[in-house]
Amino acid sequence: VQQQRNALATFQAAVPALQQQLDTNIHALAVLAGTAPEQFTVSDAALADIPIPQPRPNLPASLLETRPDIRSKEAQLRSANQSVGAARAAFLPNIVLTADGGLSSKSLSHFLSSPFASLATSLAAPIFDGGALRGQLHASQAAEAKGVADYRQAVITALQDVEDSLTAAQQQQLAEVADQNAADAARKAATLAQAQYKLGTVDFLTVLDTQRTLYQSEDTLVQARLARLQASVSLFRAFGGGFGVTDDSDSSTASTSTSSRS
Image (tube, rainbow, N blue to C red):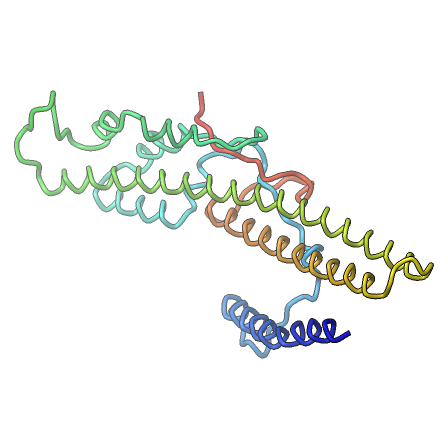
């Protein structure tokens, strides 16, 4: 009995810190929504009831154009009198985001191995010719070349961000499924222990142990659901703030991957 009292006291001691964290997060949401914290309310829906959108297959890489970092580099290209359309044609259309049931880094390896020198030559004034330096570059020419290089690096970073976010979303979904199975098994064990206690085949301490295991597994499941929701937010941001979603948003895996267009 004393052990159970100690466990109860431990759980009760954690409540104030959790309530403070909840209030802090609600206040942060109020600021993002442009509302005073005291006037802001959130839904009391359970995490399990919040649908998680999944990206549609064969997403165009042009979605990355909405990312702030890509838009910033495009603005720099414009300031250097560069053709943003030419840069997009050289880099973004070579990448296709697909959903083929697995994740790979083929797109990044293909992109990194692309003949950047020839692409840059078509976008900016030539810097080298046959390895020989052709005079001093003007400041405008250097700015143009740097703009192209920065834009390419921004695209590479965006692709890595998408790859990382897709992997996280997929793995978090697998983790949630595993934790759901564990919670279901713990629930069955607790129900069985309760029935056995009524028959007199086990003592009440066994019932308490199975209930404690159940509560812990349910708490782990809630944390897994939260982690999956956070991974979905990261994926949403990686795509620049949005992507086409499937109708069955919470039943399919986040298995979208990036691969190079043939």
